[in-house]
Structures are given as structure tokens and as C-alpha cells.
Image (cartoon, rainbow, N blue to C red; front, side, top):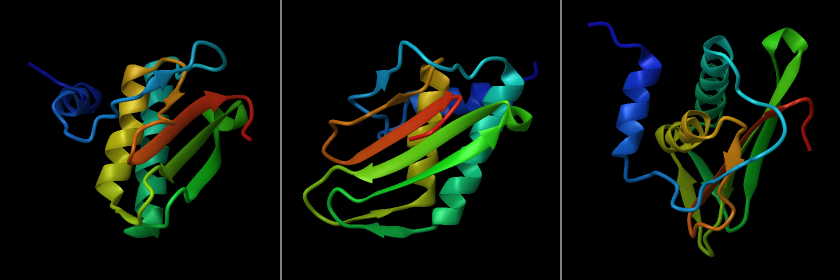
Length: 129
């Protein structure tokens, strides 16, 4: 039996204590599409979270990044925000888990803007804000 990395990661995310309680999937806009685009999105998430490193976030602070994807035919916006009223340290592994969950659960991307904690966003499409 042969398993791909996406299937393994999806299984691990199903049991993760970091899974967003308030994840909202978008019902319009761009989609992750076929597996090559999903893999590209997961790779962008991995690289962005690693580039952030272990980072201090004061309350309501956010970091976001817009990437060109699909050979310039699309964009993906990534965001992590501290939704707590206290300081937090974002670990790369937490960043990856929360953003990758959106790719696996939401065909058109999504966000969590209400959790008292980390508020991730991953959004495929034609532009970024």
C-alpha cells in the first residue's frame, strides 16, 4: 500500500490539538484545484512558516505574505494573527499545522478570525489584499 504525504498530513491534522475551532471556509474565489497546486500551496506554507522562525507576536499583531503561484497564473495569501489579548510566540510547526489544515479542509481557502489564539488565513486566487 502506498500513501502520499498529503494523506498522511490530513490524518495527523484530524487529531491535532491545534486544529482551528472557528475555521470558516470561503464559498467563492479561487480554488486550490488539482494536486500539483495543493502541493505547491503546502510547500509555500512550509517555506513561509520556516522563514518566520520562532516569532514573538504582541496582541492583534499579524504577519502576512502574498505569493505568486502556478507559474504566475495565481496568487496565494498567507496570514497568521495573534487573536489573544496577551503576547504569544509562534512556532514554525504551529504555523504550518494551522495553515495546512485550511488547504486540506477548504477547497477555496479559509480563515479563522474569532479564536482566542492563533488566527490563520490561507487564500488562493488572483490577488492579495
